[in-house]
Image 1 (cartoon, helix red, strand yellow):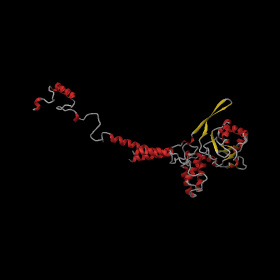
Image 2 (cartoon, rainbow over the protein chains, first blue to last red):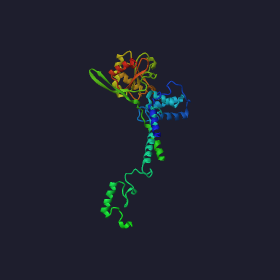
Image 3 (tube, rainbow over the protein chains, first blue to last red):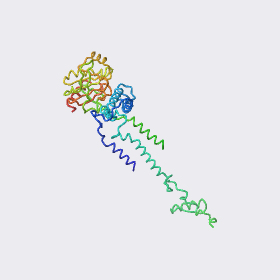
Image 4 (cartoon, one colour):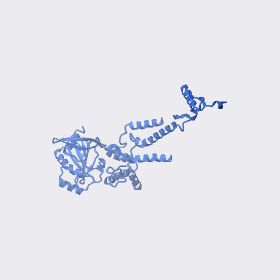
Length: 190
Length: 189
């Protein structure tokens, strides 16, 4: 049930249209504090690590030595120094390059699947395993669903099956095997 | 249980960095009929988030110096903005088509923006091959970044209101230029 609810919520999140591509617009005023010195260096690397270098193969702007990445890093630095916050800067680049430029998919729309899909699949798999284990004969009581009858269910030497035709057959076999149809020798009985 | 949690965490972390958004999808393959032949253009219009939006502003100095040219100075005219470099072979291929189209379409403003190249080499190239429109130096690459340029050549077709109507990636030929300019004149429709 919880799994179904989870799957439903994931699907709903995926189905809802994404919000406008950017929460901030290029012309907006800076939302943060102007940075300088060591903090500016640190933040430049931090934001650069979240940006994909457009001319590289899966490298961040912080990691790439390409001219394009250097130019982008310089722009990040300039914007941080002017007081723009991380989200404003990422939104600016997204405005030009699309969501592709973000190395960390923002949590919206189909991206929820990326963030929580794997965990959801693990939870769903765990639930299936738990369900299967609960149904298995080892942990489920005495009433087994095994096709083999237990020893106590088999007719013994002196009892007969309930089915009259089967009972007649058993008596015939006993007659052939032991010489008497009741399974117990007449002298044993007394 | 710890191992399980670790696996879960690593799955999240891996996903975090490797997912690629489908923003660079090819949009269509345009087929042009010229001189009775069918010339197939290998799908070069790429979906850019800027298509349909106002073109990012710029103010850049032409190769060899002179007064800076800005986007605002083009308003009222459809524009073709071509990002190029002398080290780019397809740019060399399309150069003739762009120069001829600019001569043929005097009411359309053609502009080159030089992408990651030296001014000296660019100047030499233009002197040698000739040109009919200005090329601008984008020294810190800011204009290329603002236009979401991935490489060269990339060409933007802008309507008279300054809105980007189409982005074309790869070398252009005259037929493609004419049809995309017609689109830009009509404001996209």
